[in-house]
Length: 371
Ligand code: FNR
Image 1 (cartoon, rainbow, N blue to C red):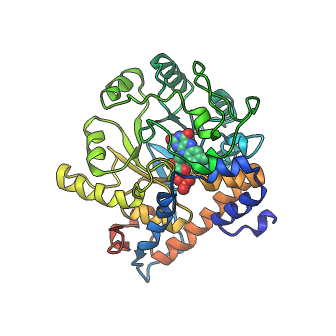
Image 2: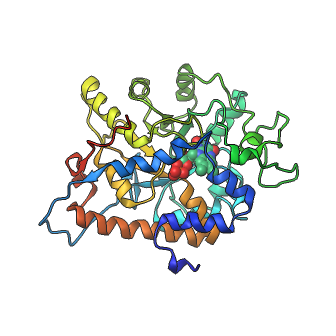
Image 3: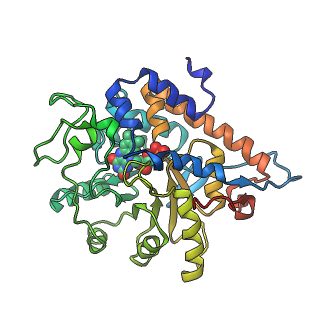
């Protein structure tokens, strides 16, 4: 189908399934074990309903925002997804170019197919990019990566904390990658790579299983970039992160690719906001500590639910991968255009003229709890 026929972000997934090489589809779409968390991520949004307000002048609505002090045309950022070249020869550069046009922030993955500098070089002057970090057992390598990112103007360090080991993604494990496959390159340098069980296993051997809270002090000593922990899954850890003085957390289960039966980010958001108020007297959104959510976000209505509940912004992963896999950079631009249209319409129908007016009273979460 032509790009004009794409009506929503789900459409990109259906098309990607048809056009992607089998290995790419297996790596992008898979999640761990029985994929219960993958399904729950989107399903959780289906348990939240709106309480719209009427008779407000909604001629002009504005869904632009600020993320860690940087302007963004919408409260959505591109979350880090590895191995962009499995889906398209230009890989992550598709995201960089589309993000530039639409003033969206891109989070660059440690395991990008394009080199880090290539992705930085493809950005426009002033374009904001974040960096997602997998921590290497060899801390000298990690230190170099982090300090290089900072020197190149990266504005935020998202340390992935939900992946001491990568989850069992069985669809992906059935695929064998050849040694010469250019899209699956080991970034670890030091380790022999096992290519017999899918892309995820081939690239992840270098990740440090010993990463722990004490390391956060070390990260703060080697960089001035704001540090955000990606993959926090309960209020206890969110509070700990705040007390450690990091800039925020991403409430995320890694798109269902790590612990199966982990809860959805949106469900965690509700308990985190409740406990912060109770224990630290903080309300959200908040300048001092950002709450991000990702996983299963496919519609502006999903985003607006997270915003109403206190999120600063949400991350989106697979839809943008599917968009560039099928249509290159233009596909990602189309995905942003669809979201912009959805924001305008849904904020009008909700009776909110800007994101400050998207308040907790606009959502009914009485059916949200999964138990
Ligand atoms: C990811 N994600 C991810 N996260 C991370 O911290 N480092 C990584 O290298 C990757 N790689 C990756 C690859 C692919 C193919 C996917 C689908 C996801 C997780 C990602 O940042 C984000 O948490 C989820 O993708 C959000 O869920 P949705 O939007 O894909 O449902």
